[in-house]
Image (cartoon, rainbow, N blue to C red):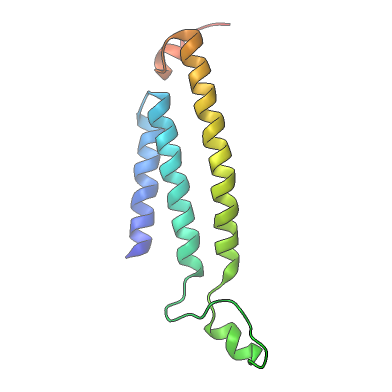
Amino acid sequence: MMYLLALLLLFIGLYGLLVKRSLVKKILGLLIVEHAVNLFLILVGYRSDGLPPILLPGEDAGEFVRASVDPLPQALVLTSIVIGLGLVMLMVALSLRIHERHGTLDCSKLNRLKG
């Protein structure tokens, strides 16, 4: 069920990226796609009734590996969140500069500009 939610978020974000003409809506669509991918990565590493990925002294490593949650997708998502935040800040800054210079955020009008 949660995989369907991630897929739905991905399609909503792709719709925003491909159909909408405003740069702000395209940025929001990209954010939704990013969150959908992050959700999918977290779901891949999820294990119901899983243990935290911390091995305490005296515990059996074989049983620990079978019962613990995979920490790699969690680390990848944390990295993705930080990179995505920097990317969004850059896109918003560029959008502000485009609006200051050309007075519009409509991609169809921006495509007609030359120079």
